[in-house]
Image 1 (cartoon, rainbow, N blue to C red):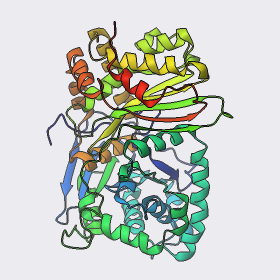
Image 2 (image 1 turned 90 degrees about the vertical axis):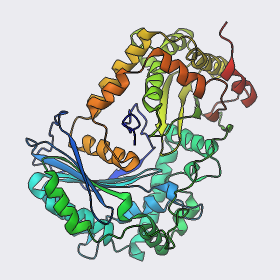
Image 3 (image 1 turned 180 degrees about the vertical axis):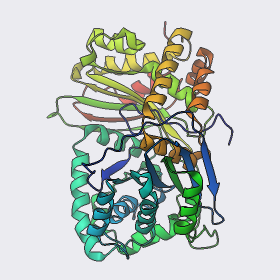
Image 4 (image 1 turned 60 degrees about the vertical axis):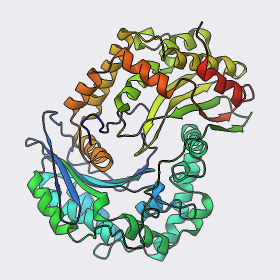
Length: 482
């Protein structure tokens, strides 16, 4: 993979892949786990004979380490019938193994003073823990145990159905989650990337033990797994632990029933210019997401998409008039009282992405103006971008990179995500260099190719009667600025 085409996620109030996560054990109250990480460290990686990869960033003065397993499989590796299996499996992984009961598992982690956590996204499942360096061997043992030896008892499966259904009810109350799930569903309709992470209610009620074990056999293979360590654990130590605990995980056999289709390794999904609208006049706001097809983690335009996103910016009316943010759109929307807030986003996946904006507004009779002037700003990016606003956006992006790497867990997350999606971790210094090379010309070129006269996907929920029809919004994607 070319050095410029490696992954880094800028978090701006929106998880890059809309991950569903939950803390599985209580943190210790007796010992602090905060450990600063030096950005001068390098990432080492080793691949075992079965294809299992180990990647670490060693900080010799760190007292703690975060270790975890990143798996290249999430809800995208499911079918319509099994949608929700990856997330269901994540819940059951903490309900007991052949060696440990659920209470023994929780007690063992808590007695270390550690944290055990997991999350599922559309393309990944992650299990990780933070502990003191001396407890890393025991932590890797636990991670290997829950990944390879979970009991998946029928009684636990039945109990967990109600837990996940309650979780689904909570997610359904979060408007941002609802809007973005509908955005994926319409942009990638009829395709695996368009499905939700939790799955539909009927699937949650019907997923069987066979579905769970088949998902493990198909996707939890050595070539799709990376053991990551960040902090005080030396690379050689983690390699030895991986050989002991993960060396027997089978490699992918292309001649087995686990073929490419069942593993979610499909052709690039089609982006569909389309919309979904859910009108609810009992709500106080209109909540609208508009997106074009974005870029993948590996795309040469990855960082240019992030810089362009930063030029559009984020805004909330609590900020007041905020020209210092460098966003022309925020100043205009504030002056004309068109919205409560907006958030630009660039969400990447292995082979595609979504680039767009999420708007909330109580000015429901002026939604046409809000959308029109937002897309007018997008049009401007194709022809009138100053070096000053690009430099400001680049500075904000670089700051976000360093601020996001503020501990061993965030560093482990960065390593795991990059290794699993691109095969190599781009260090923060390399990211800064790549961002620094982007010019106003690059931004305008990106906008001309990705934004100008492109189909859009629209997801709108709430008081949206005043939102123009799709054809009118689509026409604004190539509006003359004069």
